[in-house]
Image 1 (cartoon, one colour):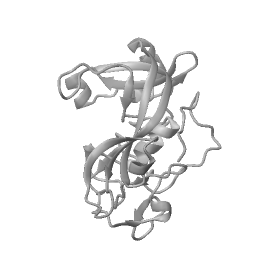
Image 2 (cartoon, rainbow, N blue to C red):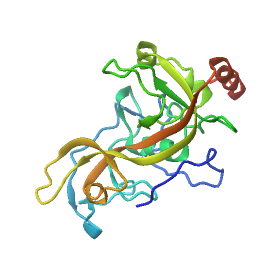
Image 3 (cartoon, one colour):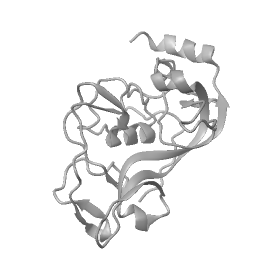
Image 4 (cartoon, rainbow, N blue to C red):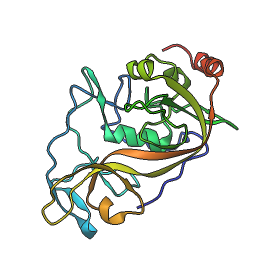
Length: 228
């Protein structure tokens, strides 16, 4: 298991793009659609004690990360379900610093960092901290200002992040011997025993060295990207 660190800037043009579940054209990019679904997992013990699907598929694990991904069926299309995220697309945006809204490279400014958008208030009513763990990927300038019902209701924080480290996953755990599911939880890279029995839905990134982003500056960056 690697402990991937944040790149200093968006990925190079030579990087390989994972096919299949990444082929989505809707907004937001990381959200599931009506044509996609989560089947009931059929799990078996795999090599080295890590669980696997009974029938192997090409997108069971994200490249370079050993943990098993929650499997999806169907091609992107139809109404967007904002409550569910595509594991492969969420992983890709987190790992490669792609925008959660459109899938393009997230906005990056030397000296400022990568652009992130967070709500001002959590679902519990508590203020959302600028730093710390998050399962929401970064954003490009256009999507950072895009209308969103959640952001309109709970407020929008535009943030420049100069240090962001991938620290673990949110996952459902199926511990042996019976494999009864343990509700979704945060599993850190150091907990290899739990990771080996985990089916992950989202990568988690720890945001540090965070400063507020000026909305007008972000709007100018968005204008430079051009119209949708």
